[in-house]
Image 1 (cartoon, rainbow, N blue to C red):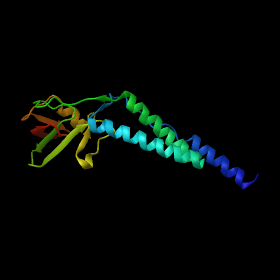
Image 2 (tube, helix red, strand yellow; image 1 turned 120 degrees about the vertical axis):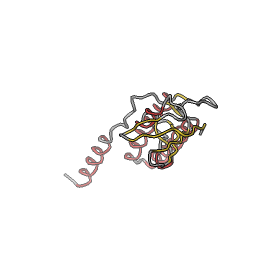
Image 3 (spheres, rainbow, N blue to C red; image 1 turned 45 degrees about the vertical axis):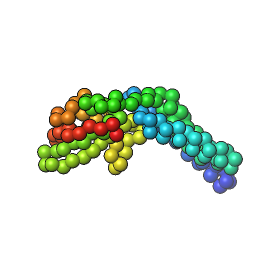
Image 4 (spheres, rainbow, N blue to C red; image 1 turned 180 degrees about the vertical axis):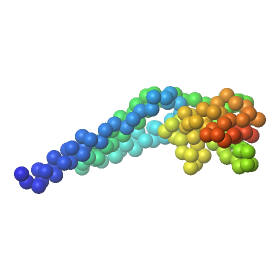
Length: 157
């Protein structure tokens, strides 16, 4: 057996083994920004796929096709949710400023799973913190992982 044949066989096995990206079982709530991110991802991936097809890059085609299936499914299941302006209860899409017992303040925006980025101040609506906050008002306390946080401010962003 030639080495070229072995390499091709290994490459085919690698492509077959990439698997699908898991789809969350939770509702796919999105903000306007989150919906735009999904659309941007789809546009970018279609461009990348076209380039990979022109180059006949089978591995790249497989990976990009998998990602396209994921983002297409996320677009199809996306539910745009915009918080009611001036709401006094924590809801999806809102910003929440919290203060801990030791005086530390944090601000989180509650967003969809795909757009959540805690390092940039956004958390998923299915995260323990968001779940603990939903329906609460300014002055209420939420307990997460044994730590209590008082809600000190709500905002539309």
